[in-house]
Length: 95
Image 1 (cartoon, one colour):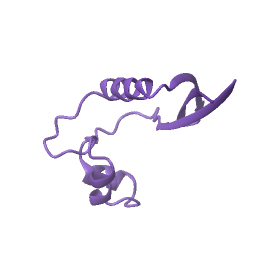
Image 2 (tube, rainbow, N blue to C red):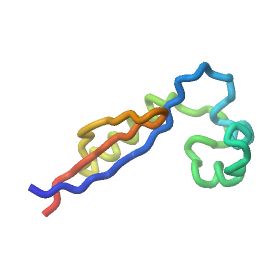
Image 3 (cartoon, rainbow, N blue to C red):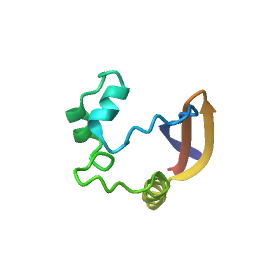
């Protein structure tokens, strides 16, 4: 059987929280030392940085993402942690 793979990267930070509001693009840009502008973050990640600030819990966001991938026939086959990075490895059969 042949497989197609899809890898998703999540940042995992084990350091104590510095209480930066994750739905605030200005604070996120500052935390990234300005490498990504607040406007870019809002444009590229609209679900995370929406205007009303009522962001869903990350577990709910991840559940929705995994359910969407499941509907596309992707199966979560493995997770791999490398330092502060967590990779979700998904696969699905191809013809």
